[in-house]
Amino acid sequence: MKAQPGQPGRERNYLLTLAYDGSGFSGWQRLGGGARTVQKTLEDALSSMLGERINVIGAGRTDAGVHAEGQAANFRTVSGLGADELRSALDGALPPDLCCVSVREAVPEFHARYRAVSKTYAYRFHDGPIRDPFEARWSLHVGRRLDVSAMREACAALVGERDYSALSNAKEDARGFVRNLFEARVERRGDLVEVGFRADGFLYNQARVMAACAMEAGLGRMPPGRLAELVASKDRSRAPGALGAYGLRLLRVEYRADDFSGPGSGRPEPRRPDRDEGPPPGQARVRSDGLSSGRPSGEPGRGDRRPRGGDGRSPRSPEPR
Image 1: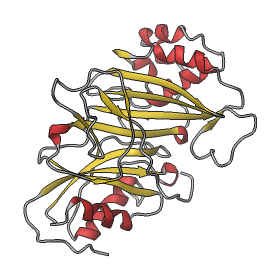
Image 2: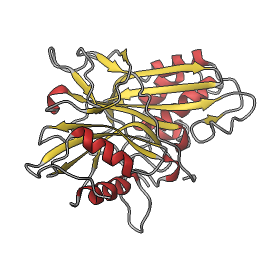
Image 3: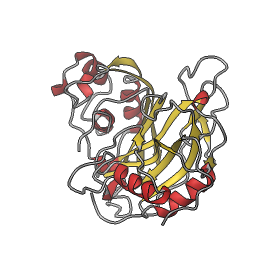
Image 4: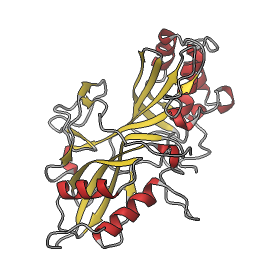
């Protein structure tokens, strides 16, 4: 059903923050053959709603089965709808396993992928003695208690600007294999252990391979100190394979404040400090939901808006996962 727009006028560029359960999607990127993907679902909903052909540009192309709490994407429209109206109308047009968290008007030249300052991924493990069917879609059950201290020690070796070719399934990359990993964290909550990574970008499968390394350290199968040596070797054959997609979530994408031209819509999220240098002095960084970090080095915490469920279980991309 079409939304009732205001007066059409100049073309506007809008940033969307999206959450989805990736189980029922064949990844982010639009595919042939009628495959159900996040990009196609969004474009179909927006095009029908606005009465114009919409092209959506994602910040990253998550693989089939990967979830998101804060995926970012932009699109251009001549519709007269404002950010609040757009968010409400779009969220009502989307299926239960995909929701629009917020909408923010961006500057005309804004591009969700190329203007991203950082991305944060997290991988979730369940290490209770009995499998939890309510966590099966979101976490990897390992069946043995993970040593969180060993995982933290191993992940500490990953932080910094380095060549991560040993921890990626990418055969080649236009930017090369060097990325700057700002933060690697390991947190336990009961029987759930979450490994999080924040970087200026990720290679194909890098987040899932790094999570596999952390798991090996946590299970005592890899000495924590060996990971630094493994990364320095640049030898992919020495590292474990990528873990399953279903345990991975894209938590957020961050941008600079000057990429946006006005207030946005959506639910506020809590913030927590981080450790990277951030934007230049005096320039705040903004999350994809439009909230300012408040200071150059501030990083937000996880959002509390979730997809509303979804059915089913769920190709390749040149970036993370």
